[in-house]
Image 1 (cartoon, rainbow, N blue to C red):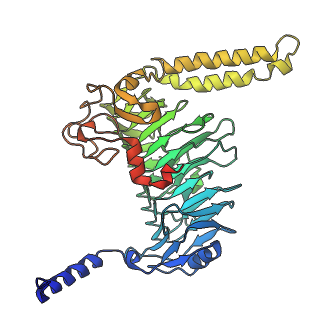
Image 2 (cartoon, helix red, strand yellow; image 1 turned 135 degrees about the vertical axis):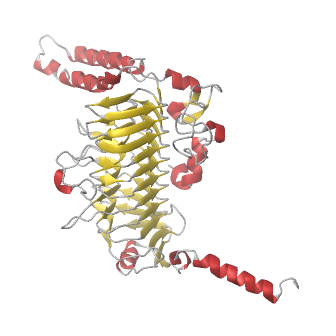
Image 3 (tube, helix red, strand yellow; image 1 turned 90 degrees about the vertical axis):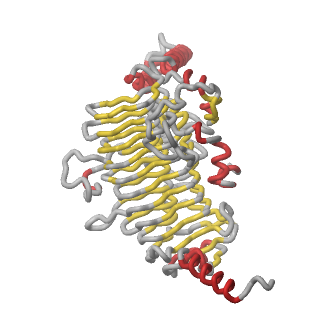
Length: 479
């Protein structure tokens, strides 16, 4: 041990001080450990900058909404975390479990379970800037994460990071509320990255389930490296993919900081949709840009869905190096600059087929009641089955989505296995040089000429089950 002289020890001490000085104080703080819902509520109410609230394993059944009002700081955020990720279960049958009002809160490693009328796990409003929502699971909420402006004048949360979370619903939600994993209205600088989102379905006729959208004047938003499976463990109803713009926003609740005093306003500005994988949204587009100004949609993979759609004159987007079933469709005077995409479909308007199918089958559903003397229930069912089978066949043909080329190139895309089947597959090296996006779905670098789609095959192996286990651990593997 003679080599540990005084000079070496002093250098080591200075290095340790330097390293610790660069860490957020919250990571070094002694946690306040809680073990039940009452203790959690007291800790949240008494929280101060730099506090770490750590939950022991167990079930936390909230009797009321928890309001997160204390201010954290950049160097001293307020952290709520599970001692062991995934072992602290937050049960909520209230409209909202946690409501964030103030900046620099971090929520990590919790398992949120919606029950009964559980609408939101997290509602993020006003000054809740720089929130970090990372490594959690959200199950059976109508809209697990909701964000919007509040107050007079309205204040919107900015620079929120939603990363490496799991969102799933065990069944179709028939409710008057929107069914969407991530519902963001307004705000600037949101980052929605590396999440797994599946089975968001709305049971009310004429409405859609959605994995996530930003809208309402949102600016500089990013969806990157997310995996969406619209139909994973259950099927049915209309399930759309990721969206810049969603279904639109009422004028009175818009974030006008960047869009100004407009009549027909853009829903998003300068936002990006990159490296996402969207699977099995059979009746809807995988990516939908609704009044998205100066958007970038690049290096996404869309399978068993109607490609990418942009809509309305306010939409101006660059659509680059995407691999998709279906087509890129500029609807209602949208401007889409298309470069390097691989589209397996041929006819844009084929995406009307599911709506036509649903209209016809619903219209004749009660004919055996209205005209019992000459139309039997069996005849109605046969006709519905015939219409559905015929139009679904058109949907799968070259006129519609035409998935066969992608099925030849990749091992089993419907089941999330996007490894190469054909070593000379068309997407390889068919994209931009230099690449539009410098990394792929697994975080591997893109160099030289890009492969088309979310995976840069030339950079190494990117296998979805392995990547999901790496990102989410037990929060995914024990589903």
